[in-house]
Length: 235
Image 1 (cartoon, rainbow, N blue to C red):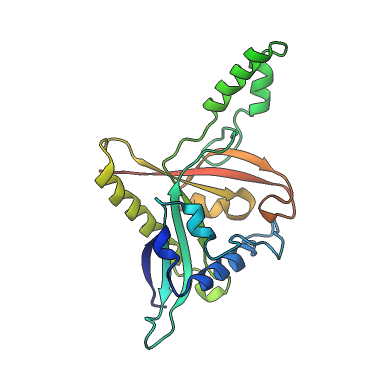
Image 2: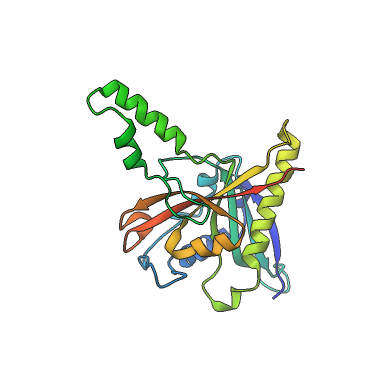
């Protein structure tokens, strides 16, 4: 299957004639479990409106879209997407080994290290532990989706989309950055039980985990969320 990948800024994305098709494709994709270990509600909706993705990415974000057809001889069809936005560490993570095994749970460490009776001191201690267990990063790979039809699987579409996002991040970094000695940290949040194994194979390593309750991300059972990173050289 011949396809091409194009990049769009968050603002340009809104003006594409196929934006509703992209929204539908993402939502259908997110209702499918990739393993039998976890299930999601059949009504799961990742993007509530056609503008939701652009709003989530913000002014600095962008989207890679895999397309077939040129709009002339064949109608343009969206067969995949992946987006990139600035990474925001929004919670406490349990530190893990690179393959996802917990190494030092936050609750145990707080109990052991923080005073129980001094409120101010306890808050300060908890803040320090939160800093220690943060997962620092630069960009977040988000909303990676393909149509659930088997004809789109195993063709390297997702890999091409991620590569396009990576190359654009590096291009921007080389223009704006002053320090090229450190790699760019590309992050992703995944459901361990669903796609964790796939992203490990793509060169990402686990840097933190969180237990999430039933209903989070429309899951039908509790699960483990992984924060994963892949460092990309800027040289």
